[in-house]
Length: 340
Image 1 (cartoon, rainbow, N blue to C red):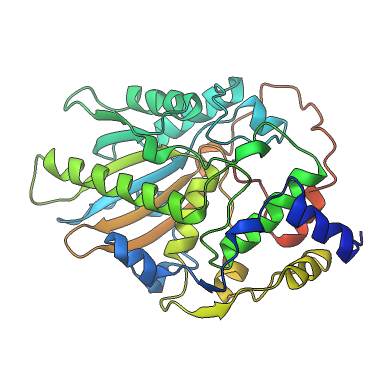
Image 2: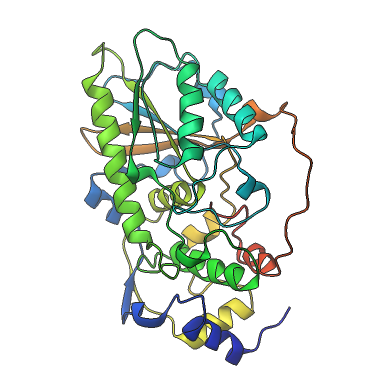
C-alpha cells in the first residue's frame, strides 16, 4: 500500500493522530540506560538485549542477598484484547474466561517463589489477575497486596476503545518515535514516554523497598510480582535495553517522518529499536529482572515467557476481529501485538 506525502502530512499535522503539532522541539535526546539511571537504575548490558534464560531455568535458583527479583507480568486477556481494540488507562475491562484461566496458570507457575509483595495497577484486568496470583501463594507468611496508579496502562487519549486505519497509523508513528527515544511523543490527549517511564520506575522503587522492609532473612533476597500492561512493560523494557550513551540528533522533519511511514521504515532508527521491534508481551507472560537497590543495578533475566500457558485451551469462540487497515502499518513498522 502506498501513501501520498500530502495526505499523510495533513493527517499527521491536522488530523486525529495529533502526534507532532505543538510537541515539536528542535532537538531530541535518545532515551537510554544512562537516562534511566537518573531514576536510580543502572542497566547491566550483558544480558539486556537477548536473554537466553527461561523462567524454568531460574525458578529454583536462590535469590542472592541484597537482590530483589521482580516478576513483571501482563494481565490476563479481556474482550478488548480479543477484538484487538486499543485498551489504555481509560478502559477498565474485566478478564474474560480465557483471561481467568491464564491467570490461574500464571499463579501456579509462581508458586514457591517466596513472594513478599504482589502489586498491580488500579485497572480491573490487572487487579483480577493479581488477586488470582495471591490465592496461589501460601497464607503464611502473608503476601502484601498493593494497588498502585504508577502501574496503570499508558493513557492512549482519544484512541482508546477504537480501531481502524487512523488509529493504526497514529499508533505506528507514536511507537516509532518512542522506539527511537523521542520521549515527548504522545497520542492525542494521552501520555508521553517520559511520563510513563517516570511513574513506572517510581512504582518499582516503592515495591522493591517494601519487599526489603518485609524481609524475614538477611541471607537471601526478596521477590515481588508486578501485574501491569503491555505498553507500560514494553516501554520500560525497551528503555532498560537502550544504548548506554545518550545521543542528541536533529529531530526529523514532518516530510521525513511522512516519507518514512510511507516506506514503512523507521526514521534514524537506533539499534535499540531494531533489536526490540519484535519484543512481545503476551497475556500473563513472565518477565524476570534482578534488581539491586543499593547500586541501582538491574539485570533482565527472562522476557515474555509463556511456557506455563502452552497447554491451555481457549474457551471462547474465535470471533473475527474488526477490519483494521491500519494494522498493516503497525506490522510493517515492526510493532505487533498492540501495546495494550
